[in-house]
Length: 129
Figure 1 (cartoon, rainbow, N blue to C red):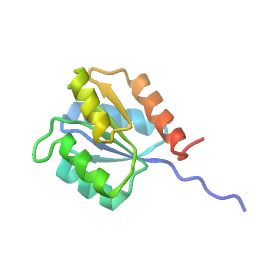
Figure 2 (tube, rainbow, N blue to C red):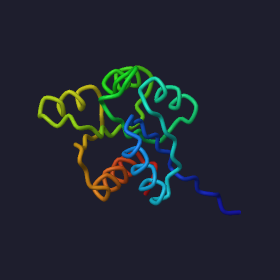
Figure 3 (tube, one colour):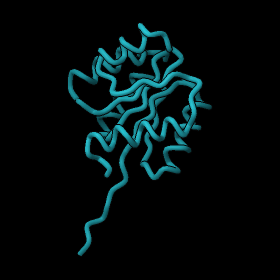
């Protein structure tokens, strides 16, 4: 009997409704199971509920920003994180990577680049081949 393959699970944590929906549709079209959160507090809740294979994380959000969510996440998990944010200075990128992000993409972004980066990170951690 052939083992059924499960789709990789991606958690999108983004407060901008339109960006969250675009990323949701694009990732779903790539065959990923998607979960959504609109801020870091909800993002951590969704992390515990869904145990995603990868997180796409914005920085500037209400209640808990992406920097704090990433710090808290790194205390408990090595789940891959791709930062997707308007903060594109060299200092911001370095901060994200030093806090434990696996990749960093600055808005505005190309959806093909985002899907390529998601695929690359998932391959690197062995979730997809």
